[in-house]
Image (cartoon, rainbow, N blue to C red; front, side):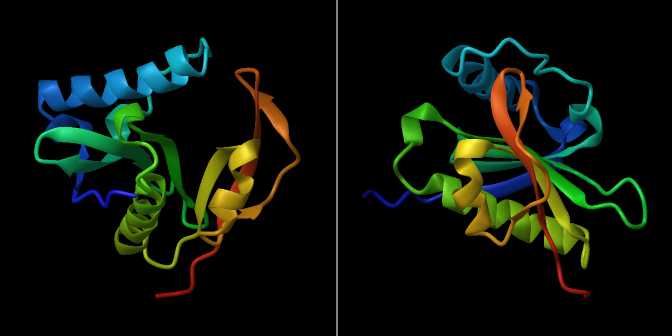
Length: 155
């Protein structure tokens, strides 16, 4: 397995260049809409208020997540739109992406739990990062999902 060197970049939508935004949205659409054959509203209105964590090799986008700040004092931070470039799968970038996303949430929102909506077949993957299933399985865009939560210790 080839180890991939990467840099972590976390920024708001307004701080992404047009080319960076295009690359991120193209990768998400290529994977979620085209590869997974799932017609859904990828442009759901949440990106402008979110932070976007990207793993980069120079200017090449390897993987990304969307981080949404807690909306209330008891609400969790939310990690979503986790995606690894099809050109870089099999290099454990999913593990690195999740570890970096959790670290960013812990740094930005100390002591807050972290939530995500996981495709059901990835339950064990997310559980390996401390996420616990908190819902029954449900269909989201015709794909089985579960809600998961990772409790964080107080700062």
